[in-house]
Image 1 (cartoon, rainbow, N blue to C red):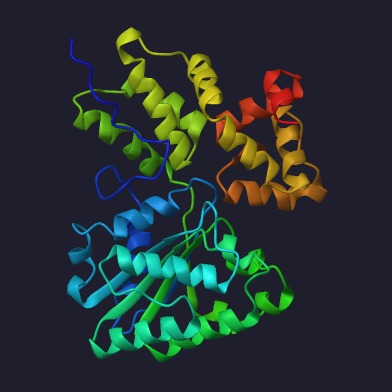
Image 2: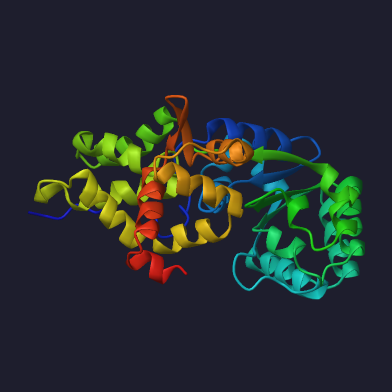
Length: 343
């Protein structure tokens, strides 16, 4: 029997339109801004591995651009990635911008304010609109190598030219600034915020069922377990579906077996998530995992976790919408291997 390729991808961003699911309303909102007569700026906010980079890859796919740009040839679309080794100062930022220009075959750029101003002027003279995609831009705003002058300059460029920015971050940018002066900068007022919320159940089911069906395989027996463990997390849905797809010829997996396999592969994600939420939210998850009611003083934290798709209201209290997070928290409380690893 010829092994079918696994149609699910969770190890990194989706590379383009193929394999990208849902987010239709978010794409419509973004397109209405960056494809305006004068490109406008958008801040895409979503928790870790919610599909922010995949969304940029989708928008930059040449096959997709005619769907939302009247004439893609009139646009200069630049992609900068800041997830790993982000620039530490203004010169480093402009070097990244220059590299993005050269990648598209544009002329080299001097890594200075004047150098970028010349690039913008040349683009405007050629009647080209510029949209700069700044992935994980929060890693820039948090760095003290960028002064208020930098943000004032970038705002001026956007306000005076056909230039827009699309940023991504795991929290609103103003919460990720290294000083209050920058947090209060008018730069952030030029952005429309688009949130990548957890998938609704119908969207989550589509993400699980569609790739398998396209491969001629049904995961119908596993869908409910996948959704109960992954909730609306795009990353965990892809991971769970991938595991279930691999196990289909062996008779499938029970829910506990699926959860164990997911815990083994989602270690980094769960560790990052646990360490980057406030202590009040961790305490809420501990209580929910133990079957205890949430204290009134922590109700706000429970509501935040519900909004982020981790919890859901049920029977007058709370339960885990992401069942895997509940499994993880209970494992920590039992003092198991994961607890020792994640101290």
